[in-house]
Image (cartoon, rainbow, N blue to C red; front, top):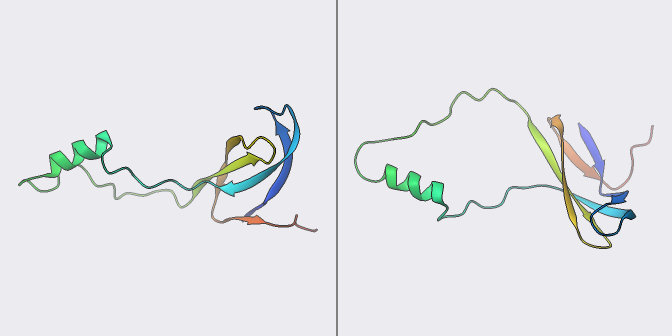
Length: 99
């Protein structure tokens, strides 16, 4: 299990060029657009008779996903995305883990 703090002091190289507090949230993919080019092409190919035209992926091998975190500077509001290693569970905590 990977545990990250909800706030972290880091260097803001975007605009501040100094160490500032960053707010951390886990990245979540947005809703797929209804009229994106690939979706329109797929729907056109699927229309009519002929059954399934494109392969449906069924041989899933990975048991984990890579975690992406969004780091937002509290001063200038600039956002940096950071990809972490693979883990089964990821959580954001208020306090650092005491040993």
